[in-house]
Length: 559
Image 1 (cartoon, helix red, strand yellow):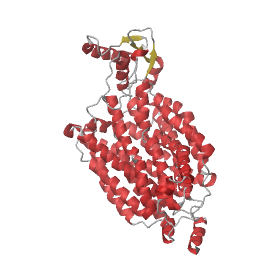
Image 2: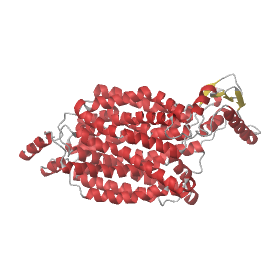
Image 3: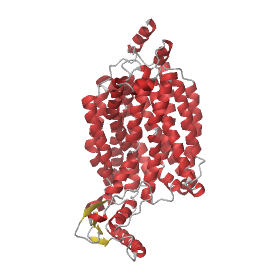
Image 4: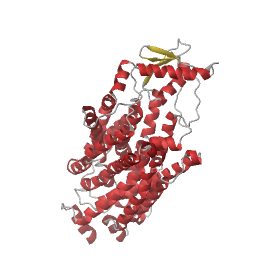
């Protein structure tokens, strides 16, 4: 045990970062940036993916299907965490996340050559989703390996600062994806980009894959794992020890409900749902939305390092809980302010000429159409579907005294129509024409006016988006160090990966699809925010009451 004791002493002793530790952080972070770049290309180009691979569906259902395809990669992340987490605890950290980057890179690169729906029909979205599933499996093993690897190289008292570099990689990967996409759009033009240029960012991933593999081949095994392996203390059954024993399973559950679930919804709201909200609901053009998000990410990224380092001094828990609480309290006013500055005409129209669907309750069902096969026949459902597809904010008022409903835009009332009425074929275009004319007369813009760079509105949008990115850095910056410190070395990779990827893969990854579906069903463009607010509130309560502080845990002690 002399070796263990001496290594423990060296690890716990405060000291500057060594050249080897800098190399480990750089190599792990850079490789992980490339993986996130691969994973987020799909989300950033959701609109183009929808038009290329889900052409047969109506616009609202097309958006939902595209977001569900995006979320499919998240759905399998916990399974990747189990498979690769077990492998990482059995054979080592280094080779496990070398495998994950190969799977991720190849599955992304192949999208560049995938035929669209027009060429392959239904086979195109099926293959696309299969590649997304492979990406999700790979990412399920990547994060736990990278975070564990860096943390096990870090000295005691500096794990928050060291692992914060890994925490920047998701944002930097997203930012890199945004910048490559924007550069490609500007170079080839919008029409060509929508036609074939969107494939270029996927093809670039082949270069990134080669660089990432070269970098990771140069890494050595983590010292904590190497020590345990030399002493014969590695786990023989990491899955059983992690999830088959209540003493560890209860920590896994607390890490999920009291940490990663809230962290995930704050992360995806601040960095993904904002982009979708700007484009789909506020009608901001894609390049402008990408630039605005990219600038807010550039401004906000250093805060990952700030809050990671701060967590070494005041603790992981208070910073993460504060980020969740701020999100709960401020999301509604922040998104309403975003509407005001990104599309002032829309904000004014919603205020002065609200749109209301008034109909008998028996005619109003659930208009959520996740399968794309639902058929709506009543005036209430048909009118709400049309408004949802048009991205129009509306309220529903049920009036049992009515036989036929109507859509009210300001003071104007447009009678609805039913699919089974004799003149339904003519009634549909007539209804839609009258609604469009009423919306135009009430000042509802078809798209947002250009936002001049450097204008007051431009700066206010940047400020609002940056505030939400800072919330992201608060919940995400310290989370890797906390997860590493919650579990013993012999089962750390497996134990921390599962709650992280259930939180981020399921609670976070499904956020855009769930939130958009809520908006489609309810009509109010802000109603989708209830999903992240409720989850973040649960995490704040559970984490505050039950999750322990971990900053002083010595991960080098004998397990």
